[in-house]
Structure formats: structure tokens, C-alpha cells
Length: 303
Ligand code: TXA
Ligand code: MG
Image (cartoon, rainbow, N blue to C red; front, side, top):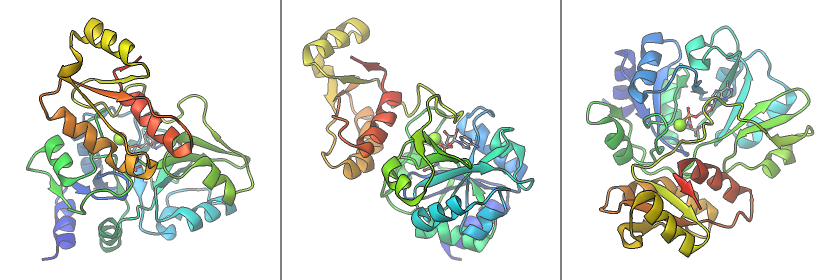
């Protein structure tokens, strides 16, 4: 039996499957199986107010899940799908309320990973999938990460390490504007190039999942600008000396920095270090802004 057939059998038996995507691994269930969808929330310890995004294999599948597919959405999907862009649109009746947390909108994304696409194709039912980590914790970018979150029992489709490394850009599309709910490696400038309505960062978190503390590693991450202030903060707030912490180094290329971000956080957390320190990167472009969005939420202190 091929690995894809095996994964389909697991899904048909009502169990969850961890799927590789180009961003991070997802914890997937078919959108028509309520019991399996409930298992996602239970296993992740995710509150029911936080909606799931739906992964589709093509535009035809996506169109069935929304009541509003406009020219703008056509332009966006033509340019960015398959890829790390989640598009929030008014939901159709086929989408169960458990997926959208009772909202009347749904997040749709076509992932750019051959195994995910093959699974979606063969199954022929879209998959709801959040990132495959416990609620608020660091997203997984490898099979080992998913294993360490959920143990041996979970079926994981091994697609290697994730190329992009941080979660997709999430946007809400309206008739007169596009709001960015979660920044990502597809940037505002890139989106603006393909549409003729204004694109802006949403001011308050519209995504119920955009909590202040999120993506948190197992030990505190302390981001600093000034070393002396860092040393004082470590002592006062954490009763630690500098040599009990490990400095995280981000690659100067944001594409590589994003790819390595979550595995670095996990790697340092698994050592004897009691804290992770990081010199605040300069936010010289939108890709760094997206990385900063994750860092800010992962940090216990920014000093
Ligand atoms: O890259 C990704 O998007 C990964 C991979 C697995 O596809 N998935 C992911 O899912 O990051 P999750 O559940 O960890 O994050 C999805 C975000 C959450 O912040 C959620 O609140 C938001 O999207 N979201 C989902 N549906 C929404 C909706 N209808 N309106 C506003 N925000 C929504
Ligand atoms: Mg997540």
C-alpha cells in the first residue's frame, strides 16, 4: 500500500493525520467528519472559538466552500496558489460551524506540497487543518517536531522539513479592500501588485487565533536591544545569569531565518539552557515584519 493510501485509510477510520505543507505541518481531518474535527480541538487542546482553515486541492473545491468568489479572488489564487496564502471568505452551507467557530466566514488555502496535494487529490474531500502543535505552542516544521507534540500514536505523512517555516499569510477579502489578519512570507506589497483594491494590515486582531501569547517555546524567550538591560532582566525576572541562557542567531536572509525559526526555538529548548535570548532583528522589510509577528508572540519578555 502506498503511504497516501495508508493515510486515507487512517482518515476513513476517523483518525487524524499530520500532513506536511510548505509552511508548517498541519493536523488534518476531512471537513465532513464532525467526530474527527472534534478530535483536532481535543488533541491540540484548542478552544472551540478558534476557527480552522480548510485545505483544498484546486479552485473548484474552494469555490464550493464559499458564497463569494470574485475577480479579485481569481487574481489572488492564480498568482499565489498553491502557496502560503489563506483567503478568508463568506462561508457556504457545506462548511460545518465547528470549523469556523460559528463565524460566517471560512479560511481557504491550497498548500504547495506534493504529498499534501496528492492526499487531497486522492481523498477528494478538503481537509481542515490547524498547525500540528498544542494550543499556543511553537508550530512544527518537521516530523520530529510533530512527534514530540503528539507522540507515537499519530499518523504522520513524512514530507521532510518545511520550506517556508512560518504559517501562511491570512487575508480577509471584501468588495472594497483586503485586510491582512496574519502577516506571512507573501507580503502586502506582493498582494497589492495583483489587485486594484487597497490592502492593509488589520488593526485589531480579527483572527480569533491571533492571541498575544502564541508560538511559545518550552523555555522563556527574551528579546533584547541592549545587553546590560538583558542581563538585569534575566537576573530580576528569571533569577538567571547570562551563561544559563543560549543566544539564538537568526540568518540575515529572512527566507532562511523564517525556515529555521521554529526549529531553533525547539532545539535550544531541548538543551540545558534555561532561557533563549535574541537580539531584536531590524525590521527592514515585510518579511522581517512577519517573522517579528511570530517572535513578539513567542517572547516572554521584550526588553
Ligand atoms: O500555514 C498555515 O496556515 C498552517 C498550515 C498547516 O496550513 N495552518 C495554520 O493554522 O497556521 P492555524 O489554525 O494554526 O492558524 C490559522 C489562523 C488562526 O489564527 C485562525 O484564527 C485564523 O487563521 N482563521 C481561520 N479561519 C478564520 C476566519 N474565518 N476568520 C478569521 N481568521 C480565521
Ligand atoms: Mg497554529
